[in-house]
Amino acid sequence: MKVCPSCGSTEVQKQFVGAFCVDCFAKKELFTLKEFAFQLCSRCGRVKQKEQWVSPSHKTLSDILRSKIKSDKDFDIRTEFTLGKTTVDAKTVLTFHVDGSSVRQERVFEIPLEKKLCLECGRITGSYHEAIIQLRGDPEVTARVARKLERILGENIVKTEEKREGNNYFIITKQLAFSALSTLKLRHSLSHKLVGVKEGKRVFKITLLVRVNSPEQKSGIE
Image (cartoon, rainbow, N blue to C red; front, side):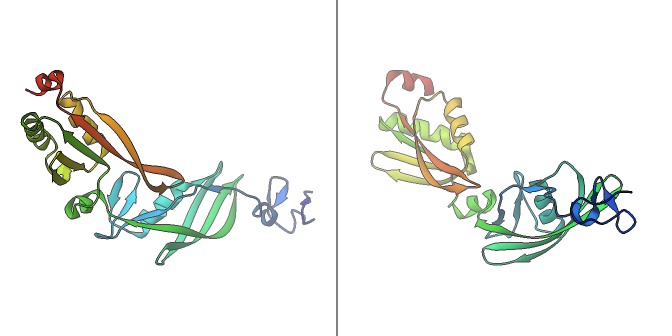
């Protein structure tokens, strides 16, 4: 007859999971929760799921939470969400399936809520950008480069600053900025500016300085 080494219960009294009764087994750490935050667009109300901004729903929030829970056992979750100003409380029941038995754990997770603009709303408001392309140098050549950049990037330029020394273009993503300069075969110098921390990682915006005074660059964009 099995006897639980933790509480002394026998298999006549309780269901067992391996060597432990189900109650004592349920006290074990059966999962880990990766640190994360729900990201909510403060303008349109959508939430970020992986790389997409989607309409908020109970299923969406549950799927996001589930993706952050890691366990070597099969499990189901049932969650009630309460939205606060800076956090989302997730009252969660996790049911693990182990050796034909169901092991239940209850947790309340306090998940940070990050309010920001999704890419589409950032583009509409003109406030979201990851990169700045600065054009400097010969006015005639700079004007030609500017026209080409505007054709390539189109609405992905969220703002333009016209300065005496040249134009600054605010680009919605770093990848688009690099791609445009690569297409035009323009050399650049790169600088980074720390703008915050996201999920424990530092977040930078970049500035790409393009000087079009050299003969090589002139010939490259003609």
